[in-house]
Amino acid sequence: MHIDATEKKWFYISLVVTIAIIAILTFSAISTNIHPPSSVEKVDSNRLHLDGEFKEDNLGVKKNADGSYTVTMVAARYGFYPQRIEVPINTPVKIRMASFDVLHGIHAPFTNFNTMVVPGYISEVNTSFTKTGEYPLFCNEFCGLGHDHMWSKLIVSEKGSN
Ligand code: CUA
Image: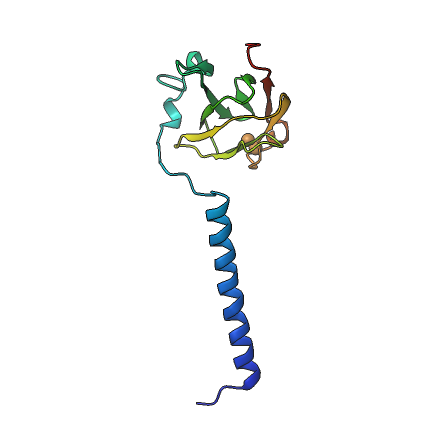
């Protein structure tokens, strides 16, 4: 079978590029510890407000016995509730979120707090914030006409001030 020399050349070039891309992805995923969520937790979006972890009374910031914090939030058109959360700097924070309605995303600029909030599932982010200040929390998945106005506030305070 005859394969044209130019075709052969491009075959090898595309093979090399493919292998290079896979190698770069593998290397960066391992070296910077990027990984998909490791557990799946389901929740009934229709019943969030009635009972359990995401009931209105249970939302907000809680300090745990070991000094870490747990933040429970709900995303709903068009806001994140509660609309203001405050946690101390350099402290482990576990953020647990669920959507009331459609797909949302939440993102605090200049931090690694960034996740999709998919209806029917609980999103969990474990992080600690390394700079004090006031951060806006934006929705970064288009969720309807009010998407641009869907935001709330994260305050990272000095240790001991709350
Ligand atoms: Cu919620 Cu866009």
